[in-house]
Length: 192
Picture (cartoon, rainbow, N blue to C red):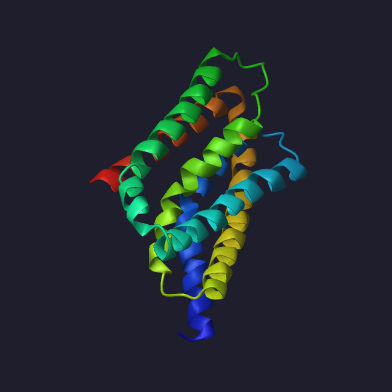
């Protein structure tokens, strides 16, 4: 594979994998329109880290413990659904209970960790698609996926913040509905 094709494939793979994280970033921006750049960097960085980690973990599984991963793979849609329903439901309830003058609570570290895992868990299977790469190629591909995810998620946060200012108190409800929708979409695609 030429280095240019490898680079393009890794970027496209990263963009495809980052779509769930982009949507969650959008919801986070909607929920917290006053989010500062430092927190945006941390949020996008968390998604990027997990989108880097999961393909590498999948690659390692293929090269070492593939029989255990096959059993786990069937649980991926269920895990993502449960995590995103939990976070989305929590945001939805907070948004409904909050009056219009109250500021929305920002995404916490625990919620962000759950979001990062939930949106990247399907990226474990990417380890199978890059199984024929040597370690350095797999690592390079995962790094490119992480960088693409960071850029896409940062953009999602910016877009969400802009709309969050316009939607005021009901942005948390919309963000929660988006997360629940993503969880259902991951589940349906993974099971059916």
